[in-house]
Image (cartoon, rainbow, N blue to C red; front, side):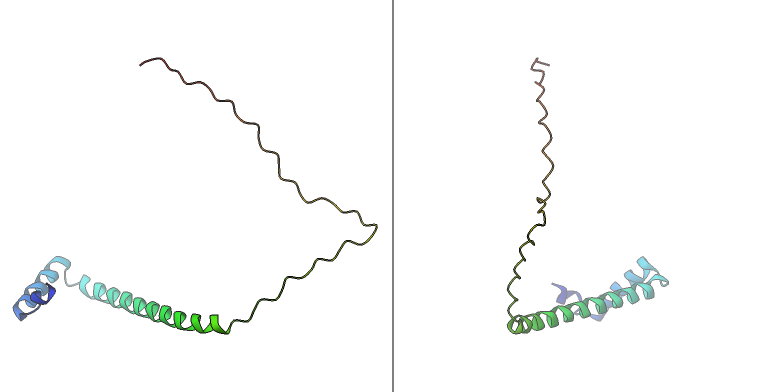
Length: 104
């Protein structure tokens, strides 16, 4: 579909003139510059994703096993043990108010 659009130099010239008339000659360089920046950013992000994917599979294969969890020491004799913080009690339930069932 787009291949038919650019098969003739006259079509390209007409499209260029229409774009020039719509956007003006002052805004075209800025638009082209920002489009180029956006394409460059997109290209670097895609390359970073590909690099991360390749490095991620290698890192996953080389990753060492995690160390076992450490045992907690028992409290010393004669030291009082305080209980863990208790969660706040739930608020009392709000009673339901009956809805008015009269016909409108």
